[in-house]
Length: 491
Ligand SMILES: Nc1ncnc2c1ncn2[C@@H]1O[C@H](COP(=O)(O)OP(=O)(O)O)[C@@H](O)[C@H]1O
Ligand SMILES: [Mg+2]
Image (cartoon, rainbow, N blue to C red; front, side, top):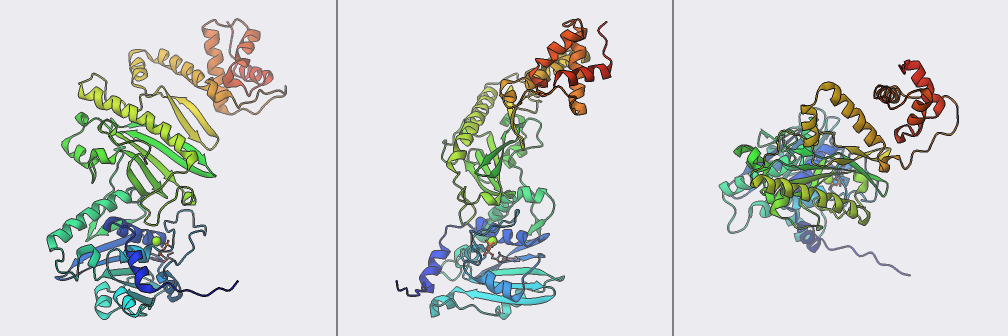
């Protein structure tokens, strides 16, 4: 069959690319992603205001680009989204540099330095529209070149966006006034502190906005003593490991006014409930239950962190702006059941507190008796040792009794029906290799049975031990040798 090359005409494509629905915050975040992908340790963002226009400058000390790389980076769709990305890479569609910039203004200038050599390119959408062709300038305008200054060191990149028709209505009849522009800049500032909080916390990068360093905003109030924290659960969804951890924030009555205000974030408490979806530590989406549940006041204390690797992009339908996700069907059930669960706890704390309760608020842990704990070996149910009632029991009893109780709980946990299904009974009667921790457990348990006079002799002791689900993987001979080695007496 015959084909005919059909080039999309430039002018309408530009309009479409400019209207993907970026907010100023998501656009700047997408540009910072590029600096982080280039391994920058310092990123400086500057918003400049001139009377009829402004400029947004993002400077980094990353690895920069050579001329060829820059040429390809300026291409619309510079990388195929189906290519596998480096494990920590934030980029995705090969579009962000262009689409994010054009959502703010009509001109994008890039000056980059690689091994001491400068390269530069500039898109001017007015010019592209005028000639209706994707014509890229190989030099940036003199005034912009002056504005971005030199790049210190051997490598780095500066991008500058001006003709800010979208960001500040430059070039229109009523451009934004200076105070409105800077109010908008402040919102961007908060947004970035939010999106990159986890990345900033890791301390490998410092990000500045108009010379003010971004400070990470912790949505989960992790350091507050009254925050309830669930166990990390790991789901294996279509070959990708997804980490999930829930938090119930403290009731307002346990927060200072300042703490309450900060935790309310940019949108207020109600609109900060729900899933917080991170991709390579960078926040993609937050503030709702992904369409599974409605937001309501009593659920506003519940926030659930979900960590995705970038290999899960396709599965979770990460969008071009990196601000929305759609979970795959086989993750929905799990997410939904976790949501149901945390929403209930949130409700309990929310109402219980409002009615004035006597619950001790100094506990750090959840109100569940059992927690699901995920690890590479699979999932396991573990007893919640921080349960407030259990903590209270420990407070009221002496040390010896406390130890005995702990030992018992350890066995309850090891013997939980859900934890023992998979462990095969050891068949062979040869001496097995046993870790010190397991040995210790056998010895502790055996001594307790002897002290409590539950068993009278070695035969009975071995019978008791061998029936313990916790020791399912050990044979009789091994158990006997551990006991003999420890020299536990029956008298
Ligand atoms: N600040 C930067 N430093 C170094 N390289 C960059 C920078 N910004 C963009 N690039 C290069 O340009 C390419 C295209 O960027 P972009 O359009 O955002 O797509 P993506 O990030 O999805 O690859 C990047 O893959 C990277 O190679
Ligand atoms: Mg990018």
